[in-house]
Image (cartoon, helix red, strand yellow):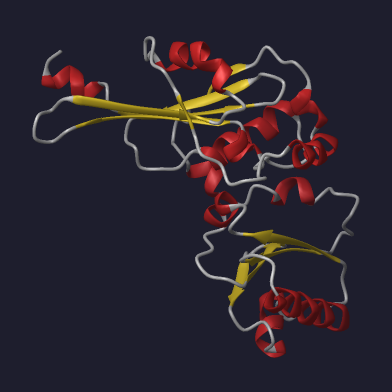
Length: 253
């Protein structure tokens, strides 16, 4: 194989399985983006889920990376799959055209993909456990562009949980600690006392859900993001400053 064909074979492949055996995957030849959040969003649309099933990462994910050694121009390849999807190696090799490659089990944090934890998600996303003849290659005419928008905004406008004028908030924290509990208590007190419209608040631990932090462009904690109504606004750090906190809601709160 010559250098040109080697260069053409360089790519990163990302696959995401459903517990029922469905597969959505992508091949990124530019190797410039993490695709997991996009695949989750696509599964939400395909299976009509209430929200992107980010819990599938990394429990049901697999990745293959092929690159060239600069000095020799030789092709190298590494492939890893979650232990829960290692049995699909034949299918993975077929969609990524990797021959008889042996996939290695990826290391997962202890307890992250525990059966008890996953059973809770099964109640929320029963469609994912149904058997689907689903093998989808995800491609976008303009990669990433439309998925960098705030994905939950459109369905939340029609959610029965919200009135015509309500707020959708996300609080990003790092781990469970006394400081996190104090932040939640202070935020809840301000929201209850100062907002005249209903709100929903989702607390996201960035150590458990880094893909959601990436999607919302969160680089520090705590961060409060007002997702809806637009424009999207955020406050980082000092959530005890009531005046500064309320500015993200605008003058008509």
